[in-house]
Image 1 (cartoon, rainbow, N blue to C red):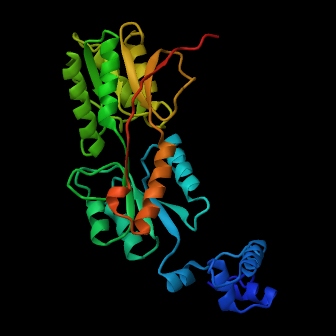
Image 2: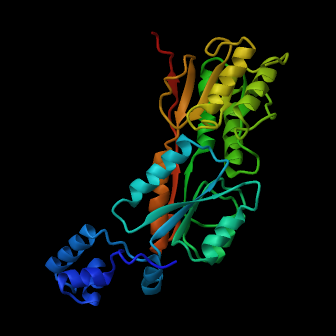
Image 3: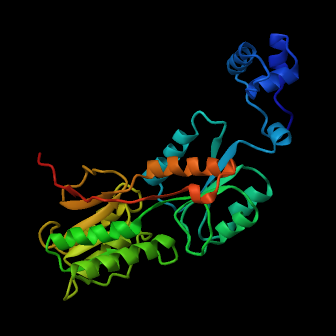
Length: 346
C-alpha cells in the first residue's frame, strides 16, 4: 500500500522552517547541541502539522519502537479490571515517548503465541503480562530473549524480574481475622485457579489465618473465581445446604466484571438458600473499588487498587527498558484494613 503523501515527514518540517532534515531530527530528539529556541520552534511546528514519527524509521535509527504491549487473555475480566489497569498504564506513560497497544490471546490456545510474535517481530520495546504461574514459561522465554517485561503477579521459580503484585497472602489472613472477630467459626474460601501463583499465596494466608484465629475451614472446591456468576451462585447455594455449613466466606476476587461479579454470585447463592449476610453468615471480598453502592446487603471489603497496579507496571517496564536491575523494579502492595460495607437506607 502506498504511503499517504499528505502525511507530514521530517522533510515537511524542514521545508516549512528552512532548516536541514538532520537539524529537525535532532531538535525533535531534544539534542542539547541544537539551540533551545530552534528545538522549541521545530517541536511546535511538528505539533501543528500533526507529525508522527515512522515506527519503521524509528526502529532503523534507534533500535526502538517506543511501543509497549499489554498482553491480555480474551477471557480476562472484561470491564473494570481491564479498563482500570489500562487507565493506570496510560497515566504512567503520559509525558513519555511510549505508546500502549493491547495484544489479545485466548487461554484455550498456546499462551506463548502472542509473546513469541511480539519478540520475534520486534514489534515492541517491552511487554506486560498477567495471570502469572509459579514457573511461568512466558517469563523464562522473555528472560532468555532479553526482552524487557513486567508481570502483574510473581513467579516462584527463583527468576528475578520486574513485577507488581497485590499481597494475597496478607489479604486472606486479615479476611479470616475479620471473620473470626465477628464470631465466625467455619470459613470457606472462593479461591483462584490452582495453576496461578496467587492461588498459592491466597491458600497460605488463609491457612495462617485459620491457625492464628483457631477457626476451621469449610471446604469449597467446586468452583474458583474464574467460573461464571451462575456457576458460583449454584456452588454457594449447594455449599450452604450442607448439613455443616460455613458461617463465613472469603472471596478472592471482584469477579467476572471486576465490579462485584463474584460478590453478586455469592449473594444470589445465599438468597437461594434463604441465608442473610450479616446475620447467619459474613462475607469478606477483595474489590477494585472501595465502595459498591449497588448492593443492599452487608459485607466487608479489602481494596485492591488495579489502577495503581497499571501505573506501577508501566513504571517498572520503563525501568527495565532503561536497564535498571530487576530487584529495584519489584512492588508488593500489602493491604492492612478491611472496610465494613453497611447497606444504605432509602
